[in-house]
Length: 80
Image (cartoon, rainbow, N blue to C red; front, side, top):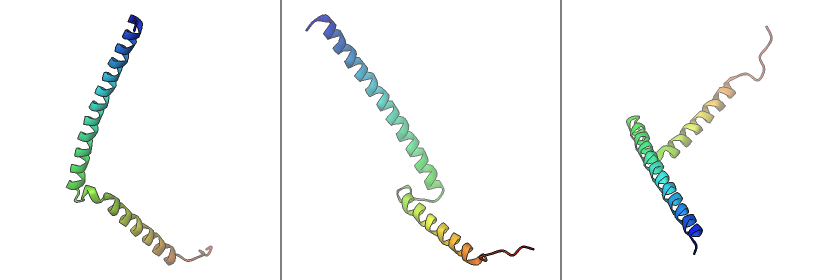
């Protein structure tokens, strides 16, 4: 192994270390953000683990209300 190859390996190792450090830093930021969002969701009275279920229920309720509104509206509106 010559000196150039050795330097290239060192550079790759250093680049890998920097990439790892950036990824770990980003992971920490995202974990803090997740914790903050979960706390906010809890403060609103919801369980963060059940959000998909809650959202689905609300979407179904919305569709039911839209259907009821459409049933109550006449098919045609006369010109006056």
